[in-house]
Amino acid sequence: MVLLLSSAASSQSITCPPSTSISPCYCTDVFSPGQASLYCVNQDLDDVKMSQILDAYLAAGVSVSPLEVLYLDRNQLTRVPTQIALFPKIFYVNLDHNNIRQLVSGSFNFSPQISSIRLYLGYNQLTSIEA
Image (cartoon, rainbow, N blue to C red; front, side):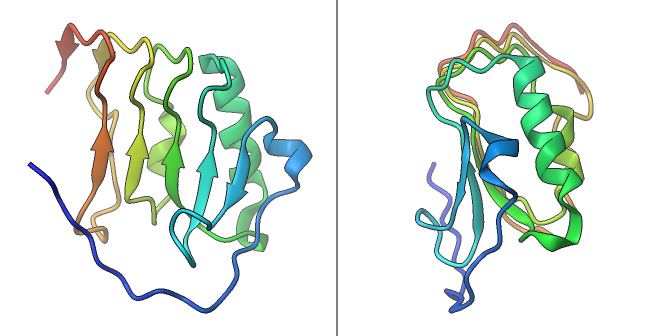
C-alpha cells in the first residue's frame, strides 16, 4: 500500500542547526521543499551517536526550522530513537536497513496534529512489536 501526502510547497527557506553539531548528517529541504529534513543515510551511526545528533537538533530550539522529515536508513541502529516523539511536525521517518529487533511501546508517539505519517521499517530484524 502506498500512502501519498500532499502539502503546499513553501517559498520560505529552512533554518538548520550548525552543521558541526549534526555531522555526519546534514539538514536540507532538497527532498521536501520548504520542509526541514535531517539526512543521515549510510553513515554507520549507532544508537548513541544518533541520539547525540537528534539532541543537538533539539537543543537549537526555535532558532531552527522544525524537523519534519528524518532519513536514518542504512545505519547500525538497534532501537527507534526516543527523540522522534519530541519533534511535533515530523511526518516521515525512514529506518530501513538497520538492526532494529524490537519496537517497544511508545516508539512512535507522533503528534496528534499530524494526520498522515510515512514510516519505513523494512529490512530490519523485527522479532517483537509491543502494543
